[in-house]
Structures are given as C-alpha cells and as structure tokens.
Image (cartoon, one colour):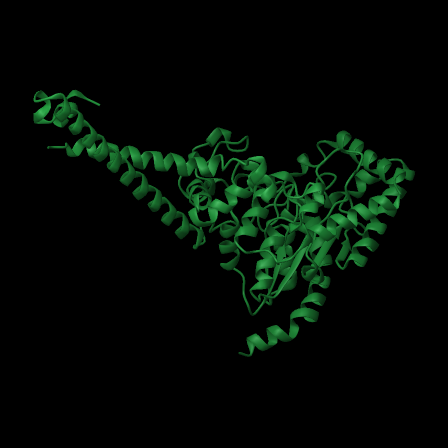
Length: 41
Length: 413
C-alpha cells in the first residue's frame, strides 16, 4: 500500500501546530482550577 | 486537502472489495494519527526544551527595572526563574546584594533611567554593594523582590531588602495590599513551586487564605510550568522577538507587535507634569487623613500585624529596611490641620509597630519638600537622591552587622 509523503507530512505539521497552540494556551490562559483543585492549594 | 493528495492515497485495491477498502482506510487513519502524534510530540518536546533553556539563561538581559512594557501592567509577566537569572547575572557573593522591592515608589515612577532611588543608592553605597531594582508598580512587599531575596538568602548570598509598606484602609473593601496585589499573585506560586521560598511559613497555611492571600487561580498553571516552561518561552519571545507572543495592553497598543525590549525605559517626569492631579490627590489624602482620625482601635493593628506575620518570613525580617510614610508634604499641607496631625500620628505608630515586628523603618518625611515629589506619592530625581542618602546608612549598618565578617572571609579567599 502506498501512502503519500505529502499527506503524512501534513498530518505531522498539523500535530506540530496543535502542540504550538496548546503550549501558547497554557501560557496565555493557564490551567482551569476546579474547586477541588483549588482546595488542594 | 486537494484532489491530488487524495488520489495519491487511494490504494490500488479500492476497486477490489468493500472489506479491503475498509481495512486500507483503517490503516491509513492509523498512519495519519501516528504522523499527527509524532508531529505533536516532536513540536511540544522542542518547545519544552526551548522553554527550559530559556529558564536557565538570562532571557531578560538589559532590564534595569520593570517599567510598564516589561511588567504585568503591560501584560508581560516575567517569571520567577527569569527574574532569578536576571538577578544572578548581577548578584555577587563577595558583596552585599541590596534588593529594592515594593511598589512604584521604590521602582522610581517619575525618575528617569540612572536617577532612580536604586541608582542613587548604588552611588551612595559604593563598590561593596550591588543594588538591584526588582520593584514593580502597584507591587506589594511580598512580591518578586522578597521572593528572589529569599532564594538569595537560602543560597548564601549576602542580602539586604528595601521595600515600602502601606497601611490598609478597612473602610474600603479591597484585597489587603500588604499581602499582595492580585496581579502579582502569579509570582508567588511561580516562586513557590521553583523552590524560592523559605519553608514552613504561615503564608502556606490554609487559614491564611481567608485573609485574601495569594489567590490560588494561578497555582496549577505555575505547577505545570515547572517541567513544561511555557511561560519562560513565550515571555522571552515577547521580549526579544515580537509583542505578538503576548497580548497587547494599553501601554503597547500603538506598537503591539514590537518586541518588548524595543520599548525604552520611562523618562523622568518633566516639571510641567508634576502635580497634574492636584485636586483629586488632595481628596485622596483627605480621605486617608479622615481614616487616620477615626480609627485608632487596636483591632486594626492586630489585623495589620497578622498580615505582616503571614506575608514576611521571620528569618528575612532582620535584613529588611522599610520606607514608611512617603507622601508629598505639599499635598499633606493642603488638608485640614487635624487630619494632618492624625496622619502624622499614624505614621509614627506604624513606625513603632514595624520596629516591634522586627523590621527597620525609615521615615522619609522630614527634610523633604514639594519639589522632591511629582505627585502625592512619587518622587522627583531630587527626592530620590534624598531618600537614597537616607536609606544608605541603615543599609550599611545592617550590612556590617550581618554580613561584615562573612564578606571579609569571602574576599580574603
């Protein structure tokens, strides 16, 4: 079976882009604090 | 996805049977998922590695003080590890490191580069001292300056801490200022999870939360940041590469994409900008005087002492010099005499309470005139020079008392 390199590369880049967004989201928005987590601190 | 790509993925068996097509499609989706996951992991790990690298170098090189565009006021949040690296780039083990902490009074609002209290203090103290300005506008004493000083103390650096402290007005429903303005709470958690803080302090106890101390909403993010270092990475990008790495603020709106290191430090306030809010400030000082006149109950002082005890670790107290009573005499003279007297009485009482608490307060009132201030609180360059001269002596006394022998020992190898 043949898989196109371009297609896989696109999926790879999409994963990389999502990682970038997640990292930026962590910086900009942070992690949610549910009440039980809040109590832990 | 374009047609060509789709075609390149159509397996030759597509015309054979439904089962084969389904199997091929499943395999295809597995490969695609693997490619996606690999891309995610590679990029995320690269970002973490870059963040960790950033956390271990001085990524804020060039910051002499945290002016608006490089402080939370401008949506720029220097992290504990970044401020630590900035401090380490200047701190010395064979000199006394004087950390200037606290609010805009200590930061040097109204004073230009080279003319701040910290700069004048460095001139007054001379070569045996390193003065670092870690104060930020609206920042309380338990902020970056105190937390970095705690880590310096833990790691054996000779330190003296200078800060300012204000009395709370219980009439106003506000977060206790001496416990930390909310915008700076992120730094507490960041410092705590990175091991900056002296252990076993009352501020870590659950009961302290009832005082409004360091709201926990930034805690989990700060904990995750220790291994992942996303805050260091994006803050450094915003500082060196583009302001787009953080969000625009009112102080960067016109040039929101400019890297934050491209903004100049704030200039000295020109004389025609002195006392521009005269009337409003007279009203504020009148309100403060009225508060001083009305409340002489011991409950207020109990509350203050409780806040200080929770906020300032006992082992740090001998090393702290506090500026007490910064207020333009011109403005104070504009309020009714009975309120002036009440305010002075309160400042003297505060002085006594701070001494009893174990800090060394310096009253910066006598000997100052209207020209030494640019508004009710902030000093002009002449005021900064006077305050620095006044602070130099207690700093020298503490340095001799607590670090004299140690520094002699280190210098003599």
